[in-house]
Length: 284
Image (tube, rainbow, N blue to C red; front, side, top):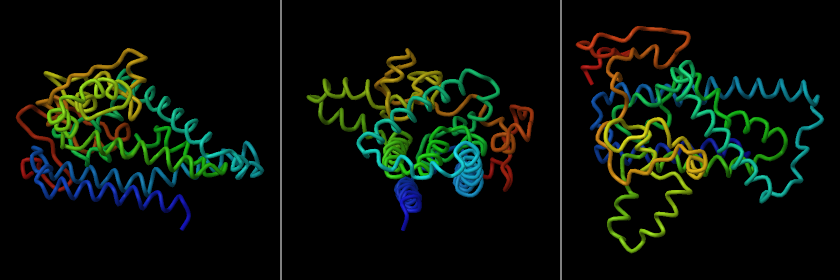
């Protein structure tokens, strides 16, 4: 089995396990619209695996052939894993930070990213909740295509695994960070350092929330929270958040959320809940 296939299977298995744990414990059902959330997650999984991945792979292959004519295939395979891994990981994290930040600052980009923020309850399913075009903008997708072409597949796979595990651990409905801190008060000096270097549920939940303890226009880093600290977008609330999603979440049409800018819909009236492909959201 090649490393690219193994990576995909491993990531899917970890996600399904985490999703099953939250589903079995009832964590997914606390959402006001669990049916809609599930459909959005399925769409994200399908679009990344069957649409975005194929398009990015084809585009990257075309660019590589145009630039190097096939001569560069595997040309960097001699580079040590311990050099390639930090370069890829730090580079991806930096690129993601800025793309994510611009997605909150530029209106047209925000409409593509907004779907990831419209979930009214945070859980691991939100990891794959996005507009089908969002993944095409992520640096991980493009870096991966070129990394495998150049012979740096192992280093890229390791970098993506770190990022993905962080995504799962920071989107989960379980506030494991607060649980550990409450039971180990002696470890506070260590947590003070960790939370300024690595993204934790505390800072990422704040990014997905609004109201008290929220910081939606900051805390952009996936794994290396130190980027937020350095660039002045960090906020560390050290508390649970009460409201997730967006105040307009119930008024967003499902088609625009998944397909903007191809589909554009006005906000639904305040008295009408957004519809899903399978029927009114009220049924959820």
